[in-house]
Image (cartoon, rainbow, N blue to C red; front, side):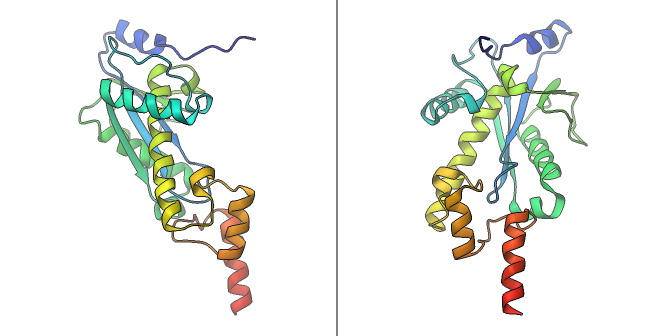
Length: 212
C-alpha cells in the first residue's frame, strides 16, 4: 500500500470553522535512558509551507536538519524541554506533557487550536486542543513539530556526548543501544541518566548493593 504523507486538511477544517491560528505539537525522547524530553509547537504559514515535511522518523538526518531550518525560517516555532530531574520526579508521560505546555507557552500567542500528537491532551493547556493519534503522519503542523523537536534534541545529545564520551549518545541519542548499555555497566550512570528508568535504576541498585 502506498504511503500517504501528512497534509493540511485538519488545519483547513479548523480554518473553515472560523479559527485562524492552528499549532501542531509533538514531543520526542520518551524512550531514551538519558537526556531531556523535548517538545515543539509550530504554527505554519499556510501560504509558505516547506516542501517535504513528513513524520521525522521517515526522514534522513540531513533532510531533517534542512527542513528544521526551513520551518524555523517560515513558521512560528517554540521548542521546550523537561529535564531528567523532572522526568524522574513526575514520570515520563507527565514530563512530556510539561514540555508540550512549555512549548505552547513559548509561541508568544495563544493558538485557536492545538493539534496534539497522541491520544491524550495534556492537562492545564491554556488553549483549545485536539489529540490526533499518529498526528505526525497526518498533520503537516504536527509533522513539522516532530522534525523541529527531533533535530533540537539530537543536537543536545551530541553536545552531551562530548561531555560524557563512551555512551554513544552522538548516534543512539540516549536510547538503550548495545554500546550504551555496555558503557552504563562499565562507566556507571551520569547526571543525565534517567534514574527512574529500570535499566539505570537496576545498575544503581547493583552499585549500592556492592558498596554496602
